[in-house]
Length: 263
Image 1 (cartoon, rainbow, N blue to C red):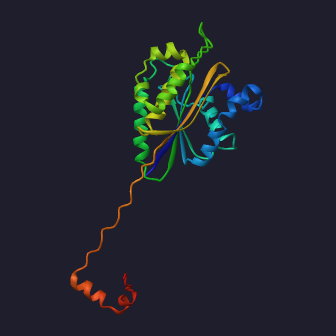
Image 2 (cartoon, rainbow, N blue to C red):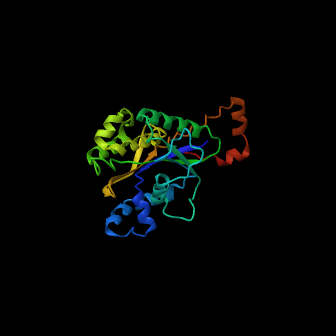
Image 3 (cartoon, rainbow, N blue to C red):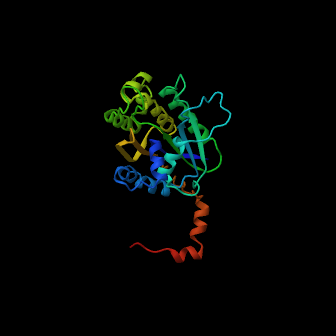
């Protein structure tokens, strides 16, 4: 049976991809961002997922009418942060584009329940696969208008706390609250709830990273592992022998040799 072993969230700031392409990752401004993902790359290398389901937003298209769509930084930036920049990704990647551009965007609850459906679908797959679900986008940011450059670290950090402890509370956050607290583009955080909904109710927080700014946004990142259920091995029931069979066994010469007195 396939199983989801962990969930990962990460911002997908396009300037991060540009810094990788232009080899600026060691520059002081960018080094603090990329250094925050060194442990994450180690974790991913050890986790060795067979499949990654990557949730990201399309940024420009109407998914109800588009016939063909190329992936963009929403998908590639988080993969680079988690895997580095190999010639090809070390495992198959399933892209899941979510509309947070066209009206109406999905609610947090709808995204959380989509995650639940994904978990059920993965568990129904008969092959023994280890799956990691990634939710990308966010955190607080606004790229235009009078509040351009808005970053709300308090809201961001509370959201990261909620992913570990109370995701159902996060699922009740309204569109208006996202807009007010996290900026016009903060709605992208509903995609993190798809990742969280795909996990078990109780999870282990393995790693967290948060920094500001990167370009004009906050960078948030968290790794959550499902807690493996360890079942106790059942001791075999003792074999009950009939009295006659027990007497015959005791009378056997080989058994008589093995008997030792405790006196």
